[in-house]
Amino acid sequence: MRGQALSPAAPDYEAARKVFNGMIDRRPALIVRCAGVADVMRALEFGVGKSLPISIRCGGHSVAGFSVCEGGVMLDLTPMSSVYVDPAAKTARAEGGVNWGQFDLETQAFGLATTGGLVRSTGIAGLTLSGGHGFLMRKFGLACDNLVSANIVTADGRLLKASATENPDLFWSLRGGGGNFGVVTSFEFRLHEVGPVTGGVVAFPFEQAPQLLRFYDEFIGSAPDELGTLAALATLPNGVKAVVNLACYCGPPETGTRIIAPLRAAATPLMDQMQTMPYTAVQSIVENFNPRGMRNFWKMVYLKELTDEAIEIMTSHYARNTAPMTHIVLYTFGGAVSRVPDADSAVTYRDARHAVIAIGMWDNPEDDAAQIGWVREFARAMQPYAYGGFYPNYDGDAAPERVELAFGPEKYARLAAAKQKYDPSNVFRLNQNILPRAN
Image (spheres, rainbow, N blue to C red):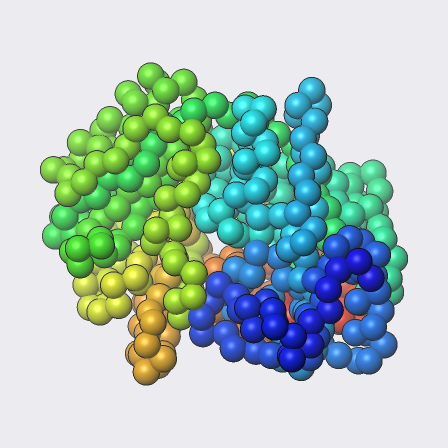
C-alpha cells in the first residue's frame, strides 16, 4: 500500500486514534492511513478477511465515536485530501478525507461554495452522508442536496459510482443514510456563487432569554433564504451566561446589513461582532464554542414550532447547568431545505422549523454521569413539544433499536433493502446502524 499501517507500537498511533470527543478512548488493532482507493480496498479486504470490526475516520467528529473501533481496523482517510474545483461547471470533486475547512479554502478561491458544516475540521463525508446542515442550507439546501455523485468501495471490495443515473438506489441511500453502505472515497458537489457574507456573533444577557428567543423565532420566520442563523444559550469566555445569535447572510453585503439589523437591536448587546467578512471567516466562529478534546454528549429534537413552554424548558434547564462549555442550540431550517421533495433522499423531517440540540461539553471525567444525565433529562423534557425522530449526527448514543425513528418506517425499509444489497453482512455497523433486510 502507499499509505501507512500503524500498529499500537507505532510512534504516531496515539495521536491517530484520538478523535474530537475526548470521552472516546478506543484502541484499534491497526490504523490504516489510506493514500488512495487501492489502499481502502486492501485494508478493507484485510479487515473483512480477519472478521475484525471496521471503522472509518474522516474528520473524526462523530459524537458517539463511530470513527474509531476497539480491536479492529480503523480506515483513516485523512491523507486523501485533494479537492478539484471546476469553476466553469461550478462543481468540485473532493476525496473522502477532506474536511470543510480544506474544501471551502479551495472553492472560495473561485468565489464558490456549497452547504458545509459549521466547524472546519468536520469531515465532508460524515456530514454529507447524514444530510448536512450549515449556514447556506436555507438558500442552497442541505449538503446532500448538492451531491452530484459519489465513488464508494463496498464491503465486497467493488468500487461503484452512485448518482442519479448510476446505482440510483445507492445514491438515494447515501443522501441521509450515513456510512452504512461502504467507504465513500470521493464526492462531487454542485457549487454556488458565494462572495463576502454579512454575519458573525451578537450576544445578549441571559436574563432576557425568553423574550429574545421569542423575537428570534418571529424574526427568522420572515427572513429571506439567504440568511442562515442559529440561537444558542451559552456561556461567554468571562463566565457570563448569554443568548448568542450567529448569522450568515450570503447575498449583497449592504442588503445583509439591513436584514440583520433587527437581530442586532433585539436588546442591548453584551458584544456585537457582526460585520462583512469572507465566508471562510464565518465558518471558523463555532470552533470557539466547540474545542477539540472536550468530553461530549449530545441529544436533539426537531420542532415544528417554538412554543412558550418549550422556551421555558430551554432557559430553565440551561440555567441549572454548571459546565461552561455546555450549550443549547436552536438551529433553524426552512427555505430550500423544506422545498426539496421528501421522496428525493433519505433525509426526514424537512418541514421542521428548528432543531434544538443539547451539546454537553466538559473536561472532568468525574462529571460524566451528571452531564450525560443533564443532556438526557433535557431531551426527555422537550419530547412533548418535539416533532419526533432525531438527526443521526447529533445523538451521543449508539442505539440501533431507535434508528428507525430517524427515518420513519417507509424510508427505513428502503434503506434496509439497500443495506441488504450492498452490505448484507453488516460490515459497516459502526454508525447509527441500519440492519440488512430484504423487501
